[in-house]
Length: 121
Image 1 (tube, rainbow, N blue to C red):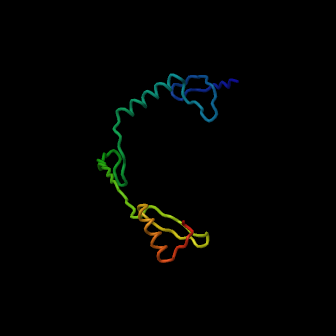
Image 2 (cartoon, one colour):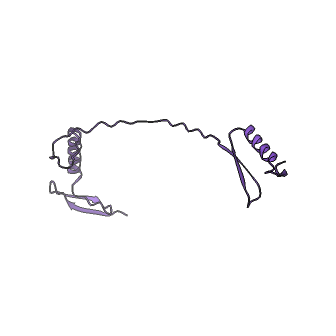
Image 3 (cartoon, rainbow, N blue to C red):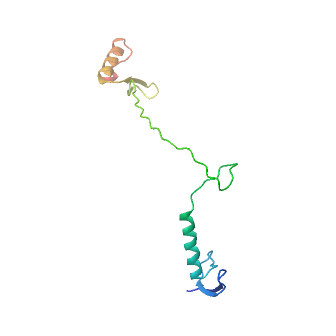
């Protein structure tokens, strides 16, 4: 299905035909469109990129500050990174330890104080 549209070029005034694309009407013929596109590309290449700051006069080029990046490495050490839970669900106890030897010593001290009964044996 071809939707050919006939229109008049706004640049040169001659009549041209093109295929309709919804939302994209054509204003210029193929030749004038190519000339305008080339002129725009040339203008973009030759023009310096400037940014306008508030209160700055248009055309006045302002030097932007140089941005620097800083990266830090943070090493985090947890004193007792491991934990062991025991006991029934409504009376949970948790022991924090760094080495297994510390856990065994802690359990032994709880047993000797009779705070821990034979549930871990």
